[in-house]
Structures are given as C-alpha cells and as structure tokens.
Image 1: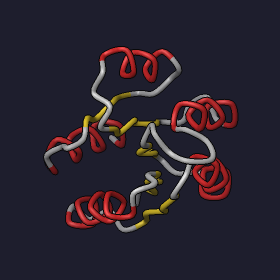
Image 2: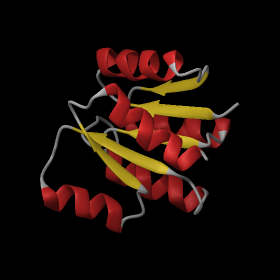
Image 3: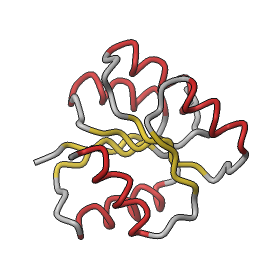
Length: 119
C-alpha cells in the first residue's frame, strides 16, 4: 500500500484530501500542517507521494519542495494550491514538482493525478 504525505496549513483542506484518498482505498496517510513539519515527516516516513500546499507558515511549499528533493531527488511531490497563477505553477515545476493541482479541485481530478504517479 502506498504511503502519502499531505501538507497543508488548513486543517479542513487536509481533512478533505484525506477523505478523498481514503474513499479510494489509501489508508497510510501522514499529515503536516506546515512546510517544516512536511520535511521532517518526509524524512521519517519516506512517502511514495507528497501533496504540498504552496502557502504555509514556517517554510513555504516551494522551499519545502527543495528540501525534500535534496533528501530524495526521486521524491514525487504534487503541488496543490489555490494560487493558480501560471508563474507559480511554472516555478514549482522548475524546482522539481512532478505536477500541480489547483484548488478548488474535483475529487476525481486529485485522484487521477495521484494514481498517475503511484503507478
């Protein structure tokens, strides 16, 4: 079974993402409420995929992405943010994110993106 790390400072967003994933059968989910915690939980749990918000306290998602990729250059990180600006998407991809999902998203859109990188 795949392990997934969900990093978002909004608890309702983490809950919603976890519920969507759980309905699809994913049960090994770790949650982080900021970028610093995401990096620490990545080190401890070595998730198969990470869903990361961009705007978070302590360490933003782009900086956390870079730290995670420094730990594991093969890490699969999907940025998940309401910031739908093209420049932010391109910056995340340039820094090594495998994909980008814009909030608000449809559950099927999120699941398609996650399963694309887990298979």
